[in-house]
Length: 201
Picture 1 (cartoon, rainbow, N blue to C red):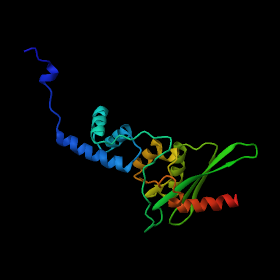
Picture 2 (picture 1 turned 90 degrees about the vertical axis):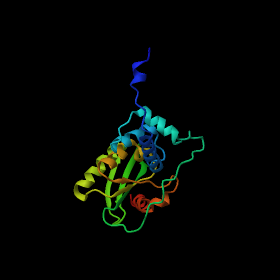
Picture 3 (picture 1 turned 45 degrees about the vertical axis):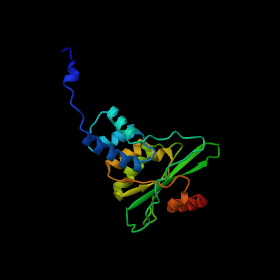
Picture 4 (picture 1 turned 45 degrees about the horizontal axis):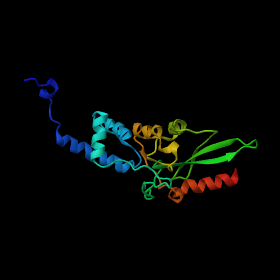
């Protein structure tokens, strides 16, 4: 019949399975506003949804989840106001950076970490550069004597939104939440601490 083997043996894709995958992609994309299909593909694999990355891209496009290219005037998606009720010990840790310069003109960064419920300072990490990997090492060090929090709350800096900290939160089952970009008052506890820290430094 001169029929290709691949055509004869082709098994139609189950559209029901595609619909379930699209639904899960939509939920993940709503939670992680700035994640593209590659990062969402990794998150699907974490949930034991193993599909080809090309299929993920096709379903991602069909669901209309493509991220708009940023214009010169940056427009960010909101992340949601953190809930301030019913805070208990280790329920949420807040983190941020304080920047300064040395006498000789060098830049230093200080990572500040507090428990929102007890207002304790859990860590002050000082370095000329603090990456996402360095942040996770600080969190692991604090967890040795403190235990892990239920949530971590940073701003939208690249060190906090990167894949390293996201993977750490997933591996340790710690919810990773954010403030709205340009709204430091939503992380008022750490901002208040940083203000007092700078005055006393």
